[in-house]
Image 1 (tube, one colour):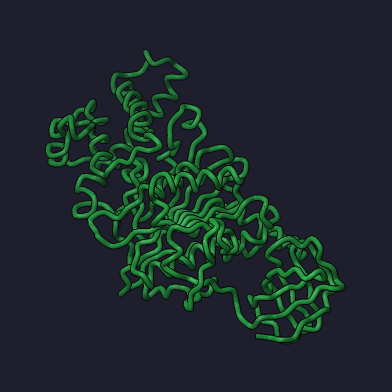
Image 2 (cartoon, one colour; image 1 turned 180 degrees about the horizontal axis):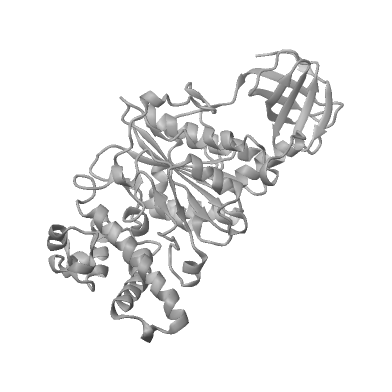
Length: 465
């Protein structure tokens, strides 16, 4: 650890300080900042060149001055003390306790940047994770080791969906430990209290680690919060052999912090003012999900982002879509129709769904049933649009069937209670119940033997209930 303190601040720009006369600062090196009144803050080297170090300050820059402020370069990058005792705890965006509990003391310290997973060492995701949500489990299945984001909009209930998934998610057919790491980035105090209360009341807090960065906290903390969560997840997964589900909300706030840093550095802006390296930066977060050959544990990610102006072509969802393996898209139309969760299955996608479903994982009829539901729902929505023009009476009998099924699909399949946890069997049986109105000839995407085995006449009323 360096014992040299520098008092050569030449400039303060927003969350950044510029320290001159530093010849050997390392990129990512941690910095201790001491104010004239004795207060101490932390920072990290963001850029280094001969004779100059640019440091981002984790905390408010109020009170910092070019005179009277000293900096000490600590000679190591940002690390996190990790321990089994983190389960059931609530931390702030810098990893300090928020629950009045003791600080985590451990000899094990992991680098926040993490180690990239060698592509050769990656194991193909293939195990189904049951979230208890029919629109995800049945139509856009989450697979262990996958990164599946949720694209939302301002005012949509993505926080409720996130807490429900966190409470209900489980890996079926295994006795291995399952835990959740929940990182909230730039949320309000009301939202933070909501999450803590949900986990406490459901009893899920004992298997959960929470990192809460509030909107009133300095925006620079948002750069660290997702990395703290993922470092914790990697410890639980690869050192403690757990299946870990990481939920990050809201990644839009993270990207806004990136833009703030870029503006303070006077960088040439990219699309809509965001830095040109945002794709690489997001990839450094999302690509930390996965499975490693020879390791029992795994890291699965569900990042949540709110699309500015509901624009799915905005740089944040656009770049996220390139990196991740699908997306769950929330719909305002479904929200107005009082459907919870308002997930639009037609614009949603899970690219790894086929690897986690089928015989031995979910059920042999899963893929073909989902295909038929997709097709029928799409035709029902087309019929709904046509009926708005010519009237429902002008539709053919088959179109009216598709319209009724589409309405029931939204009300009975997509819509479910906030505390309703459905098994995959219940989800698939509801799907068959919806299709019961169609003749065998109309179900062109399902093999006759599957219709015979799993069709409505084969499902008892108790199974459907």
